[in-house]
Image (cartoon, rainbow, N blue to C red; front, side):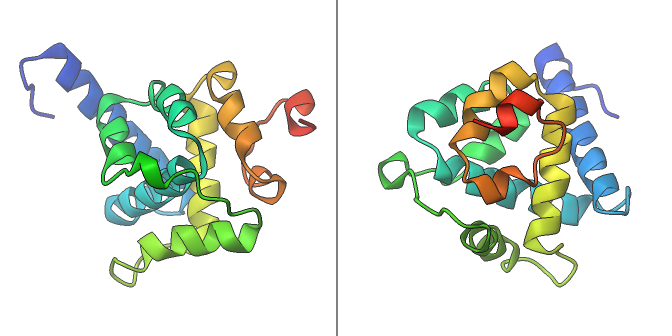
Length: 153
């Protein structure tokens, strides 16, 4: 990897590449960076748009710098939070983003599981708990590694 000469940038490039590699692995092909990027982007957008601006800011502070940039791409806080409550509504939101890319996009639920798995491995549970509990119950079931007491919130 090229050294950009600035530690904060070098670190975020490494971290973002790790997130993409882990997402691709969760999707079944560790070399499939493009579908992994689109899955990450689509799920981050759905998550961001389902939360309040304050909660989105709290959550995004835990993300690597470049991933945080993806999270905020095209963000319109005045239009949030959206009120989807079912898994079908969540999947429709994720699909809306995934439909904008070539045919190698994962299914919405597969993308969500993959990204939530990476988040559960990369982020501190205490820092993302409020975001998790703001999600509708059917969507929460896709997030692995949730402490038992939090799953009941």
